[in-house]
Amino acid sequence: MDIKQLHYFVTVADQLSYSRAAQKLHISQPSLSNAIKNLEHEVGSPLFERSTRKIELTDAGSVLYEKSIRLLSQMNILKKEMEEVKLTGRGELVIGMIESVRQWVPQVIREYHSRFPSMHIKLFEVLSRKAVVDSLRKYHTHLVITNQCIHEDDIESLPLYKERLVLVLHRDHALAQKNSITFKELEKEPFIISMEGFQTREDILRAFALEQTFPNIKFEIERFETALTLVRENLGLAIIPENYLVEPKDESIVRKTLDSPALERTVYLMVMKNRYLAPAVQCFLEEIQRNFAPGHKGTDVIYSMGKGEKEKLESSNL
Image (cartoon, rainbow, N blue to C red; front, side):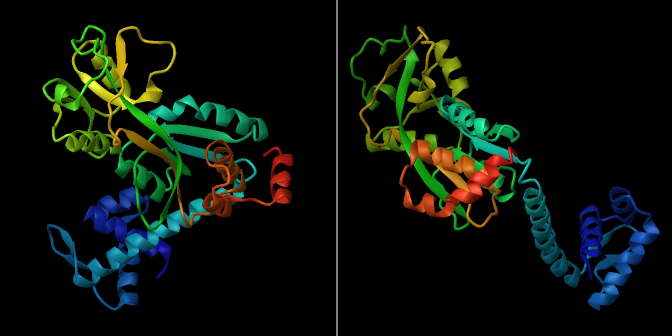
């Protein structure tokens, strides 16, 4: 059996129809039927239960389907890795990130781009824990900069820095003029918080729990920009990373610091442990290291590149 046969087989199993599968594969139905018959002959067992109404996988077909899915996925990843090897000289860097890193990522990219001007760079937001893991495992990103605390055997999680979470409220809110605010004072106020699956939500709820209270959640959001928009309309209070409150200053919003060890989050650089990364991509990781994790032994070992190799890469001007 070969990869093409398995691809045909999986497509038929997904479509549960030879005609639909043939259309999707852009081949004739007789050719597809013959390919499946040849595969069944090699396996030595029928793969589909055929009836006039529908087709279903046999026990042997179910086993082969599960194995084929994994094998085809690995083959797809292998093809992508080989494409990256070929594109080392004119490669692509795909960065997943949280909102707050927009304050410093452009500066790192500027320095990096001056060394590798032909590198094509894509940036997009990857916010939830699931989105981070999926984007790395499915090779949608080379790296992700996130505050999600992820412990997975196949993902390298390197701490970069910590950032404080602060309370934001409208200047006309009754609590805005107070010098200090307690969590008890917040428990009845309409509260804006990230959706489930976001690390910041867990951090905030833990801070409330430490004070034996719970926020009055009225709004659940995905992006902190949305939280700030709601606060500007005096619709509620929110706790957000301090890095979002940058110049120009918003006169309608007041920030307050709450006394809690939980209101601090760590920002991580995450990559797949065993993934091949082109030298140009590794250079970007080193650029981040120089900014935030100088002398970090683990990252130095993983991503260090010999001087000669680096000079050769840069002199090629990609």
